[in-house]
Amino acid sequence: MPTPPSSDLKAIVLIPAAGSGRRMGTAISKQYLQLHGKPLLAHTIALFDQHPLVEAIYPIVPEDDSDYCRREILDKYRFTRVRRLVTGGKERQDSVRNGLKALAEDGYDQPERPILIHDGARPLFNPNLLPALLDDISAGGACIVAVPAKDTIKQVIQGQIVASPLRDQLWQAQTPQGFRFDILHKAFQQQDCNSVPATDDAALVAAAGYRVRVLAGEDRNIKITTPADLLIATALLDSYQEKSA
View 1 (tube, rainbow, N blue to C red):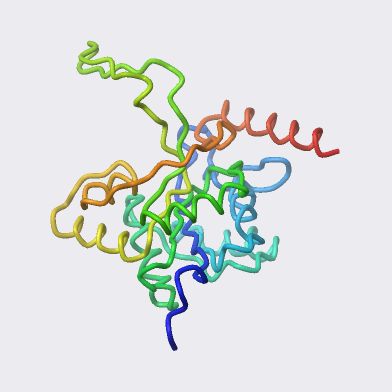
View 2 (tube, helix red, strand yellow):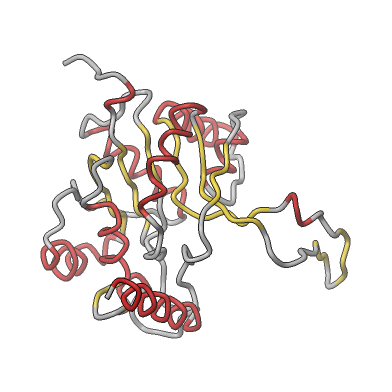
């Protein structure tokens, strides 16, 4: 079957969701905590499930969570574009690697296919940014969503400041982070050979020699890691509902 032109290739979304409740102080993993009566992960999947530019979604969860996630999220909310659950790995990059393997097995490994990686605990991303993000991926091969740093950042070693980077050069990385399949695949292959440390997928791709563009995101796209984050997310959703009422 011939590969369609790149303009016809819709995005595949990998959603790593293997976080614990340690910093939340809860027994349940944070991706299953309730936000407006629905698990965080369900909110996150819903961002992409009906989007016309998304072909398929692969949530990535710990093996022990598979039955619970399928029953309480996938079956309950009847998502239509979730292709299958993927078993996560020990580290986040292991989980993403497993996701890449799964989508390749399902035939989504065209070199120019856009692959989006989005944190399961970021339920407030604005899907209206997807067209611009996918345009940047098509043009340059790699692009992430980020926001300019608002606070002055200090580099600290052993309790002492060693550098004060210029704030106008600092951005806070968010997700989705998007890459052409061939670029992301090669970056993971290089990491396998060289054990390149990387703090996120963009760092992995940059370490492989590719340029990564930045698309200005929104402050609402927070990652839920602490109880305070959950309160902020609840307030933001309340605000959105009031404005749309």
